[in-house]
Length: 155
Image (cartoon, rainbow, N blue to C red; front, top):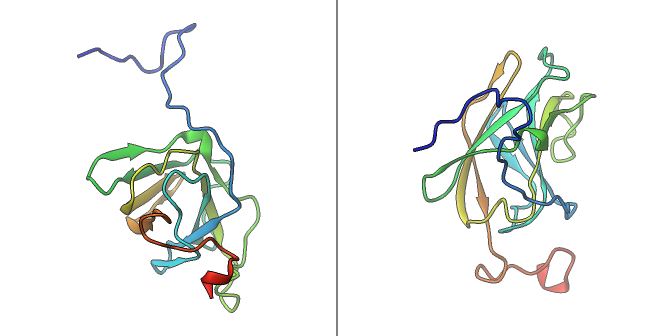
């Protein structure tokens, strides 16, 4: 088993998986304050965004964010740090406009990163913030017979 040094010696680039970002425009929201899931389920291999609404008043501006995922088969996957960030302004959720504005974290999935259908789990760590673990489903529109968004079949 190879031994990895951290930080890597200068001149050596650490290995990172490559998942090109080609966002589909789909965004789903996990309300980390109350544990709710809002929005459409992401599709297998889709490049989309996860918005992790964490509540008001958390002191974590410009903090690096680490997302950790558990795939449906039980393997643990650490998200690519450069794909996650802290939102710069508080947002209101379009799904719950009556709630106060939230601070949020975002993770942009690359193409192929959600490479397994089933129930995934996610948690996030940022400065002064440690989330619980939340679940979301990744679907395969071909296998699950889901019509494309905006199609006549969807109604």
